[in-house]
Image (cartoon, rainbow, N blue to C red; front, top):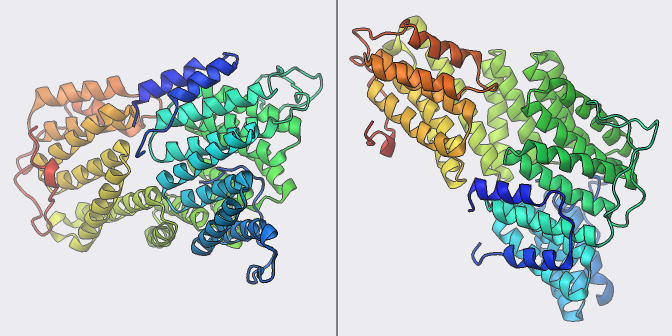
Length: 548
């Protein structure tokens, strides 16, 4: 995996540079895949509810020259129905038929479809191989537009497998290629046309028709998504604005809606609630007009997240319920799982612990069905947090020794599973979140040594990931632990670092904790570190053995 700084420098380096054949060929050499190395990957339009629940059509008696195309269509239908095994068989047979017939373009198109299937199955490395092969076939056939789509899809697969530098290269190449194909006319204003971006940019018009505008827009939207992930938010905003104008010029309402939803997500992450709400509402209008049920459901889920942040929990629940109904109707397993996990989070805030656990249980089962490890890890962490909260509430009332050990055991089990998944995914921030939660449990049990070891391990991971808010929260817990152990100088130093690293995403509770340590309101008590609930071992493994 390439370093974040390298990927960011490459992202920033392409802005405003005109595409030339020499620059394209040079970049192609630089971005060649290394050996060994979900949603809208292909961007083929709206996904609507299945019109029929019957069996896919039989291909008995179909002429060989038409069978490959029919197999591809049936495979796509089976993929929408989440019948991955049957879809894979149809794609494999179609690829073999096109290969035997010498139809490179037909073979490339099915490879693109099979790559999307493999992404859904959670195997991005195999998906990237399919896109590699499709790219070579498009190049051999002289299909530049197909080449651009394959580069974009491969970029998505590379990002999923953690090769962010490779993803940057592929997106840049795709965008340069579409510019070479003629999508270079600057966007010009048109008086009186209302723009969906109401942040003071003023009225704009759609650009004149571009032959590859939608494909170019999809590549820009994908690069914008990656830039958000890399925290290059100004670059992401530029990509989204240009993609939105291109989709608007092509009359592609689903494309416009997908960009608005992504930009809304970015603005929500920036605490721009007004801008996010405006983007979500506009996207909902467009998805409803196109009867794109999956897109509609995704935006409802996002607006539910926004309303949860705004503490409009009744409105959030309505959005989640509608989204869940749509995802269920379209048989989107992962969509259902994401909504259930979000609704569980909301119910946890309401202290509706029984229903929250029920939602987490259902979400976890669906994420496992869909082979989605990141969703599994996040749900296990959330369920562990809820069980830890139950243990803490009881411990505060009756004492640690009298609290129900089953809640503690269940929380530790969830954390262990989540940590293992985050390690496989190489998600340092995710690992750090679990380690900090386990540190909290150790501190509550009075084992300050184990707590500090876990917090310091979390800090080391966050030093690399660059998440300022999480780092600040972890430093505040380190400060509290030092204070409880009677190490005043170390406590003060950690509290000062916590406040220095805080950003606008840092919660008021974290700031208050650090300030409490600095003011001397948190001090050692005789029983701290001397008592510990020995019924359940903390067993932080290698982290407990680290020196601190």
